[in-house]
Image (cartoon, helix red, strand yellow):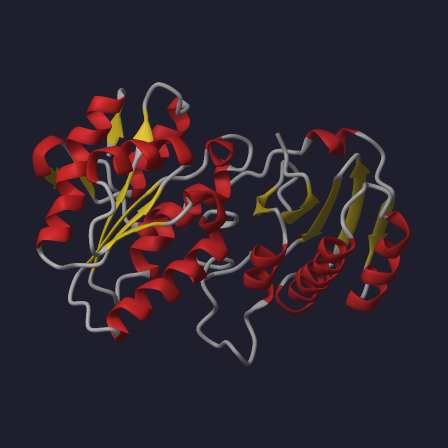
Length: 303
């Protein structure tokens, strides 16, 4: 749902939410603080209406998918035959990290399809960049309007169609500087050791240990599923660590890699999924040299 004023938001969101309440359906609001306050002022605290802060839910795409699946599973276990959710990507997700949120928006069409869910994603056209709105149009099968109106979206390309499109990974600005670590043909254990001496970026210890696990998983993937040479580089800035892992392989065949566990999990295929759980930003695709690259960020996300 696109909106350009508080009135437009309420004209579309309120009928959607009231329809769920009147039908006795679990109805969830996962929005930012200001928009939650708007809806609470209009609707109050009705039975069956759940207000949950969107910021915690939308910390990372893979975390959001896991959290929603847990939430929906609980509603179904309690007997829900239909569930409604209205949510939004936080403003910071519409900037430099939009690439993995765009993949999230495509993936949820598959991630939640086993549940009786009607979900409405909202976007403020006054502040959402044009390229984001373009991706939104291609990842949502329907468009909602005032008074309960919704109709098929002709721009929708399907989850697999969107996710399978070639992606060029543009360099992070920090990559213009010499890396602190630059190793080729490194084993996962050696990759971890190489990073132990570069935690000068002010990244918290827990986040740094998570980052080591994520890098190890990605290096393992490159060795087992990619093609040599496997190269790992690391940069550090204030409050931020960036690692790239490149190889000459084709990259994952699974379009949902990273956001959903692979079909062969738990006996394999969890490397990118774990990295998406543990890092503040993960992007993968082809770099400008044609190599397959995974870039992982710990600490402060890119801006």
